[in-house]
Amino acid sequence: MSKPAVGRENVVNLQERRLDRTVLRTYRTKADIDDIVPNDKQPRLGPKVDEELQRQIEANGGLFEPLLVEPHPDFPGKFRIIDGDRRWTNSRALVDQGKEDYRQVPIEVTDRTLSEEDRLRVWIYIHRQRKEWDAKEKEMVAYRLVDLMGRTSAANILGITVRELDNLVDIFELSEKFTSLRDPSAAITWSRELMGVSKKLLTPSVVEAIIKKVNQKRITNSKDLRKLRSILPDPVAKANFLSEVGDLDTAMLRLGPTEKKPKGGLPGDLDSVMESMKALPWTALQEMRGDKDLLEKIDEAEALLRSLRKALS
Image 1 (cartoon, helix red, strand yellow):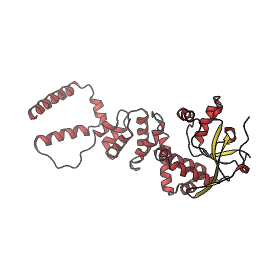
Image 2 (cartoon, rainbow, N blue to C red; image 1 turned 90 degrees about the vertical axis):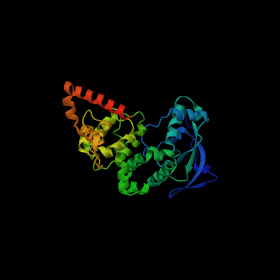
Image 3 (cartoon, rainbow, N blue to C red; image 1 turned 120 degrees about the horizontal axis):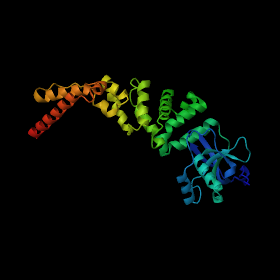
Image 4 (cartoon, one colour; image 1 turned 60 degrees about the horizontal axis):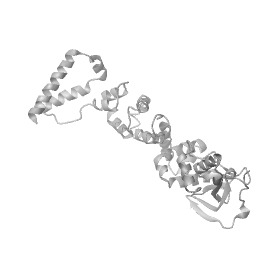
């Protein structure tokens, strides 16, 4: 049976905390884990069970940082979590494993139930101070806030324009399509890199091809997506990339010549041959596969180039 929650009548001193535009008056105490209720409108998405966090809680003999909670508006004597849902979830997991030492949880309680907007402002302020906000949470929170409150209110809470908000939401929605990454949290990084490419170039067919090749692990480094800035404006390189067999590297080989001062003599001839080879469509190469005469000419060219290199070295 759970122990009764600490009520306001036990409060001696309140401390004041200013979090962004919201001023909180709070007191610290402990509560039974059954008297603490998660917030079903918490912005963070994804799994909260974390075995490593459970090990840390055990190593510390309990939670080191108290949960920030408020009096629950619907259940007298209980508290609703403002910040600390993951800590509560993993403490709960330890109790469910029969480890009763973790049943009493340290909490910091607000002197009132917050408005939905203040609750979100406080949560966002706290998480912006942590490293994971920049690493993976900004876009997720923007997406969640739009779902909870609409675009205008979400932009206001985040302190950004609606246009900036829409960009964050676009990045998050795109990240959800990268489904085969070793580290799912890296999807935001992939999406950010892709959104760094001009939107005029990111047609639906291009985005579909990119996601497919990433999920097939044919593109394994998110920074390589920057090559698309050169590939997509070039018709030949783009066609190669969009083909079933094309990838970033083969597409880069087919980029058209850049504006250069023409070279004369042997260097110029070599440049011409190389540019001609790069411009050859991938479909044409497929048609020439297995051509014995062509393969013999390539062998002759390789032998000639080796001799030339040896003579010039």
